[in-house]
Length: 223
Image (cartoon, rainbow, N blue to C red):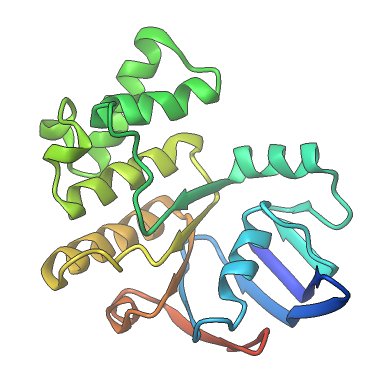
């Protein structure tokens, strides 16, 4: 079974009296453990497509299912439930809370899932260990390097044990050697834990860990 199945997805927005068509029939399938790089120029629709797969936006038409759960016509609460069960996000800017330690950033995500107290502390430590950040658990983001912040962000994305990880330009703020380490970690986690990984990127280094590279232009995906 495909963990991501998007078929002929379209998305239009209203801007005043005009209708802007951002996606024009984008299709993509991801298998468990597969790493796919999605490349395209600015304005090609890749962020919109990622947002639809992540249940942050609703497609205008077409079919989308995540881990076997269909999103076609889903209400916001239904889409949110699918996102919490199956999706982990990793962002370019890390999006860590500056006043919280690495462990507390992960614990906060666990709290949102209803996991609290000592259980949350133990799970946060275990997640940080999986990304090689055990010795930085009590550090604030300002005391972490870019690569270390991204590792914490990956640990946070794993809180839900997601079927799918969606990464938006995750190496954009990292130097070459650190980006390589983060990409290798991504690939290892995806394949070892059988999670589908979609990386939206301009970075050609992502190709080294990707099983497939697909391009998007003018709202259409060409595999």
